[in-house]
Image 1 (cartoon, one colour):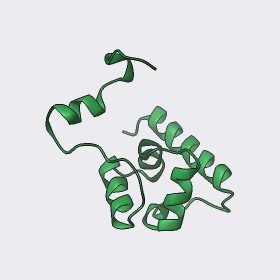
Image 2 (cartoon, rainbow, N blue to C red; image 1 turned 135 degrees about the vertical axis):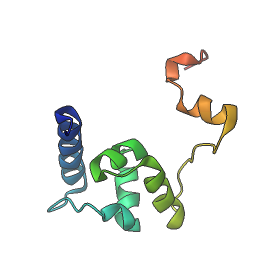
Image 3 (cartoon, one colour; image 1 turned 90 degrees about the horizontal axis):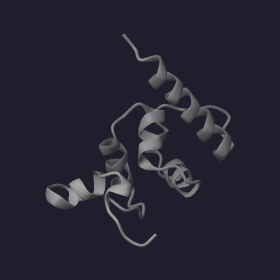
Image 4 (cartoon, rainbow, N blue to C red; image 1 turned 135 degrees about the horizontal axis):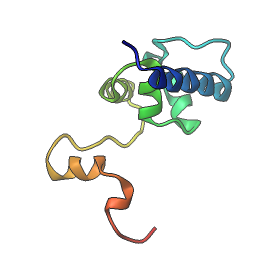
Length: 96
């Protein structure tokens, strides 16, 4: 059974991308195109947004970014640094 909330989030994210990038339609495999990927990231969409819209994992989006040599911060692979990267921002105190 498909979660209706996740389907709504996916549909909304697709519509946001189409509007922001002035596309005629949403193409499910567009994340493999370097110009689309760079434009989406420049428009302010993050890896999670793209993963939701394209119904792939964040890892798949990161691999596409790396494959096309697009400048973008990549999370650490393992250990404490990865847990820190994935933690909720308010978990770590500090200056904003």
